[in-house]
Image (tube, rainbow, N blue to C red; front, side, top):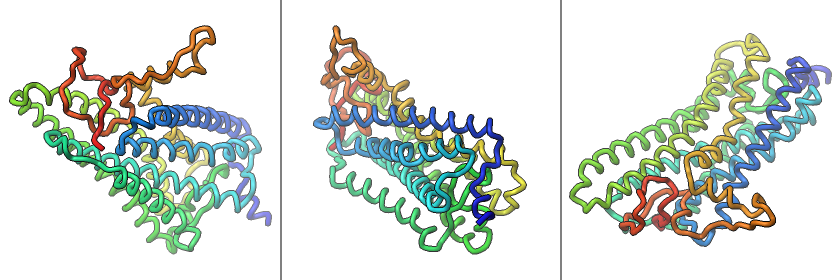
Length: 351
């Protein structure tokens, strides 16, 4: 019993435990507020939401789910200087963390593929993405993530405490032999392959937009506006993908190192850093929307509960403001004389 309890005892100093708890609380608040904002914008725009935009809504759900189901327990454990709930909550924490992590990267992968397909059909506005197809893609994402999260419960892989004692994840150090096939398969199918697909799709989209721009002079100057809009969407999509991969990259490298070496050689303070950095991945998406989408920024500022009582405001229904989740724009010419460079300035998406 003593050995079991020691597994969940903090290896960090009390001051560092409190600091880690405060950091996680800050991340949790930002993540919950930010992703709720994204979902609120989607709810207010639901009658105008297009099928492909559901992928961005789905991504916000994964980030919000991770923040709500994981961070409160981690904060309470950090401030208690030991993991609360023992083995049962440790397995729960590892399962939901792995579940939402796989769901996020698979959602980003599907989003990249859809963006690439849309970019290939800039000249074909008749190409549609149906509600049925997008709903199926979202469902497959969740089912795929659930399957991988259940594998350690079913005996392939294992959940366990992190080396610093205040978090739980896949027990990397315990899978050197019997769980080695799980580690290789997990990294190959849920990190390496998705990363290659995401990079390839966005690189291919960049090349496609470049050559489309060079040929655009023969298309009555309509296509350049679409290229500018796609360029802004490409920037946002790439930043979101880089944010996720950048946050989880250091954690993945440390985890792989633990498979081939003795994990006890890593100081607890060092093993804490990539874990805390990975948890911040749920914060970046709303911030990217806010700083790179003027329409999303405007909608957030116009929420009625943020406005003075004496000066009520409401969310705009203008077609020029509804595009924070854009996947593909319509190529109809605009009447508005303003430049169509901004991400939120065109509303119609492919259905």
